Amino acid sequence: MKHFKSARQAQRFLSAHDGINNLFHLRRNYLTASNYRAARERAFEVWSDISGVAVRA
Image (cartoon, rainbow, N blue to C red; front, side):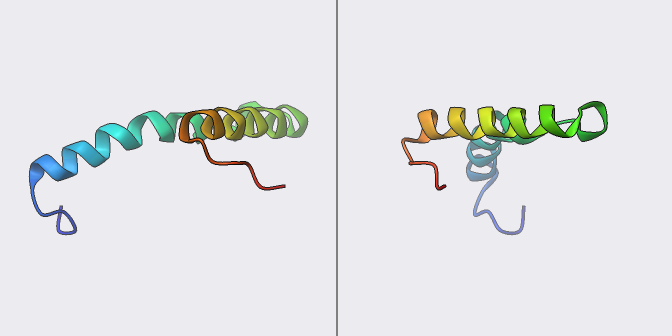
């Protein structure tokens, strides 16, 4: 909380962060390397669609 000016500002950040964090929080120990890479690629594609930012190659 020390970096936020108010509890309201912290809540706004955390509510936005939650949806984004779930895209990239993969359970690595349950995936093969190829499935993990594919899931990361899909997560970056979704992030690109949501944010409107082009994915860097």
